[in-house]
Length: 90
Image 1 (tube, rainbow, N blue to C red):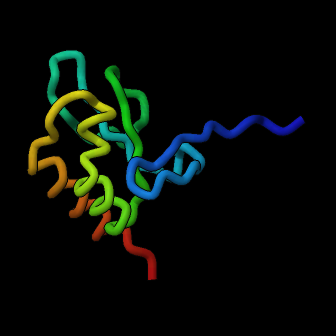
Image 2 (cartoon, rainbow, N blue to C red; image 1 turned 90 degrees about the vertical axis):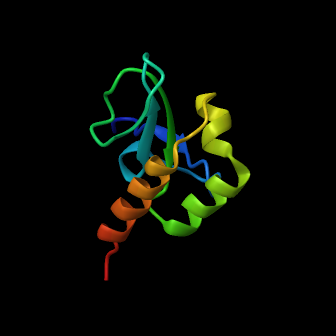
């Protein structure tokens, strides 16, 4: 029997994907917002595809802010953009 793959929804394109394919943004118990590449940090998490167009959609719709229930600092968006730029395949 095959193991069930956890699915999460991207906050940009709203597509469901395997959890491992997405970047996790976490609001920690202290209230700060961080990127979690391990997928194990404590706190409330939201997921986003590693594509710039998904980040732009999520930023415009403020879907990460709604999901995490806190304002997202501009530095977090900049770091996400940088990570996505480095992970471009091709």
